[in-house]
Length: 94
Image (tube, rainbow, N blue to C red; front, side, top):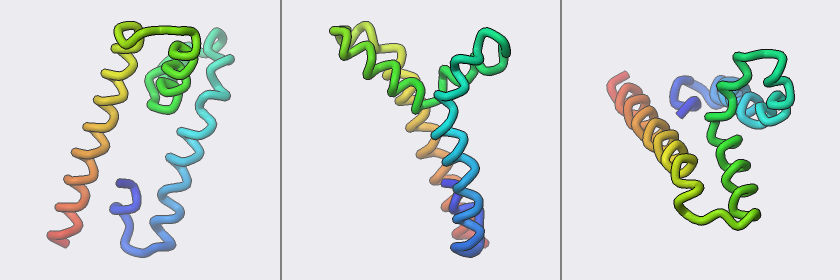
């Protein structure tokens, strides 16, 4: 989706790096949650939700216990799909 905002492959590579680093390194900031309240928002990112679901399933949680997390992951997937369709249609008209 982020690559659709660019006109060249070089621009796409640079644009994609910011979300890549943000989503990759956000779990490392969670221990700072006690000191900075804004970091609590990171718990709702898809990568952190996947890690949480994996830990719960390892501990023997059933489908009902991870339903909220799966719902949030579904919302992230739908938002990414809608964003990609909108960006693709915008690129088609340019």
